[in-house]
Image (cartoon, rainbow over all chains, first blue to last red; front, side):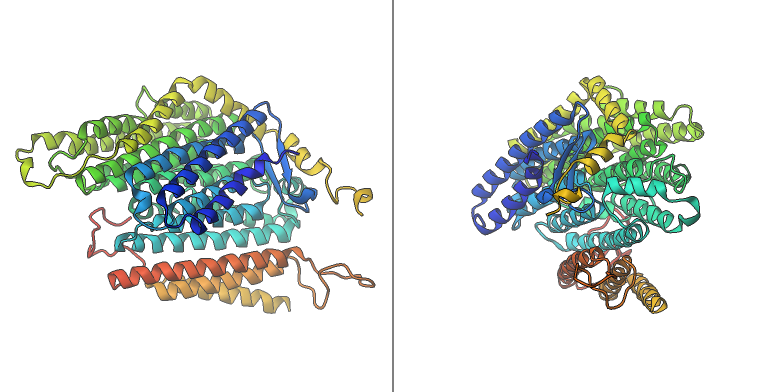
Length: 513
Length: 118
């Protein structure tokens, strides 16, 4: 049993207190260790992803206790892919935070950042629903700290809303876990998959309630309308790099939905039939519409980006709610795209803020570093709106293709295409106000000169843009891989067998002292 | 006993929900705490209610209570306690900073909110 998989959780968990305790007043040491930690995480995550890319499943039993009794971490194609995405995003966000000096505007940025990574990676790797809850709490409590990093009244006010909304979500999660445990007597995902399948239709009341509650919890995390109210102000008010890191947090909700509703409550399961097409799909279509309408309506760049996150999550959820292998494959391709594009846009929003002091969508004299920022915004907006050269277009095409032949195909195509047009208008409007109109303003002399953002900020943002381009160029390979991920998800037999049948302590009577 | 526990959970949840729909942070946080108490009792009851039975193996005992929910509840209590402390601190900071403890975005736009309501 290789121990590398738990290093993904232990390493940030050790680094964070080290940074708080030993390097409290030395920002350089904090930066070095934080960066080294993230680089090590990338190496581990990449080797793990390589290891499971042939379809094998990595199982880690803590203290070697066998599966339904002990805690397990499971790495399969889906979880390692999400882990790799998270740590790669974290690297660029960290570079940006260092370059822009955001990490030095308040205390403990790097420690909270590491704790946030620990929660994210744990949530992707755990094979146990209760630990999913625990890691959700770890990532949330770190995100509370990150969100109000550097303080300010508006940010604190948005922070209160964010914390309260997520606390309600956590409480709902606990109610869901309680009902699942009362119905099945286990919280291990693989064990649950077996036991839920055995529940007859006559005593399915409890498990139905539990599955709907779980879906609600994950929909809160994924900001599906009507549970999205926490997102716009909290993401918009959070510091730029933190908002960029949060681009992966909504995807944790999407990941949890994919995991739980393919493994435990698969689409052909009788007791939860109708949940996806009746509830999730319409809600996803509404999120897509509302998010893209918000892009057009927003009067500040950070709000615009926050609404585009809601819209792109809507797109992801549309593809997920189909619950076909091709739908999940398209959703995974789009998840990678929308994480990168959302992060790029949040970083650009921060570049604009540091270039001219605010992010109001009004014509103002040219900001510092306008040409580079404008170029990056152009690419980021094309990606997010889904115009041809970049991966947003391909992702949208995959979603449309996988929806072809379903009952709601007319609705899905209509909503996706019209909302793309709306978001295109929104981004074009924002871009022309921010970057074109300033040149026609006559007298820029009377405003104070802002400093051009640091080079490292541009390098970090440009790095993410380069990843987006790579995601487009290697779209065939990536989509081929997500197709294999989806195939593995829809044949959960090896997953369940690996988790439950690998011998460990307590697994057979003769090994029991 | 079942009816007692069930109604306790129900009343706590109802009270918690009512308080959470208030506009100011103090009642909302109180409601939050009531709701977490409710969910803790609920989790505890999810392993079935048994009276006077030990949770761990002992000689000469045939009826046990399920130990796992007790462990889960312990975790949940610790987490909810910490979370409540965090939200109290952030809410206090927001209140002291802007002299206003409403949890919603103010429509009059007293502070920088031209982006409108979320």
